[in-house]
Length: 211
Image (spheres, rainbow, N blue to C red):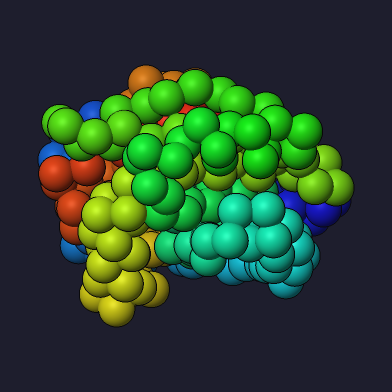
């Protein structure tokens, strides 16, 4: 963690036009000089050192959710897309019948905090819960079964179609926006990947997060 903290402090120099990139809503290798991309690659590699620990926590959280709800969770957050920062939490999702949500609330009442109901699309909502494992926040979204199917298809497409080069570029911009205090731009930027592959979803942060 010490080396990562150092990286987070010093890796903020950029030649990128962040305003132009955020306005465009996407970035590619063509936006980067060789020196800039080298910094982005180094930062991306430094984030990957957390993967083993976070994946182990995700497995534990998924098992708990599976036992409580009878549903198979899916990583719907930045760890699943390999776009996580050092402070990123875990975001899991399940499909659950809308007419049985009261039962879900009862099942999770003693194990998680209910954060509220959020819009997912123009016509549907999801219930959001939160709990903690070893100091890492785990958010659980209970989507309609149809929305969960769409979300899984979107995540499969991101996994198959988004290149490592795109991930490097995207995460570097995400880091720069957060480090420079451009919180509104940062909040929008981290959702751009979802919007690019599934524009019908309204994947609002849960709640406004900084990772």
